[in-house]
Length: 145
Image (tube, rainbow, N blue to C red; front, side):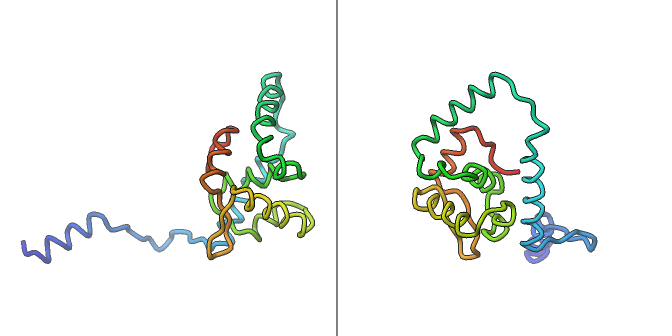
């Protein structure tokens, strides 16, 4: 076996096979899948509450107290949760999930960024910073849908 044949065999062993029937997603449809899953999670009527849930809520409230400026606004925790669960999501797609005034939504995002919880990439996608991931973990958010 020649060097070229050996190299080709090694490359074939690790090469990803692309099938014609593989479904491809563009960024907006991938975001839509994430948004659909988040909408389903936010259907709070399907959850029963127990005393332990109240104690967890009190604990979460005390953890979030450090970031009072961020989480005093309505929907802030839902937005933070959505970003944490989606890993990275386009800001416009995230905006569609909530029925907020655009200025209020952007204000919440800006406050989160100012407090070191969020970062943006060049594609206008938002994701949690190291501090944001740490906060998410401390309040019990399992990252990624």
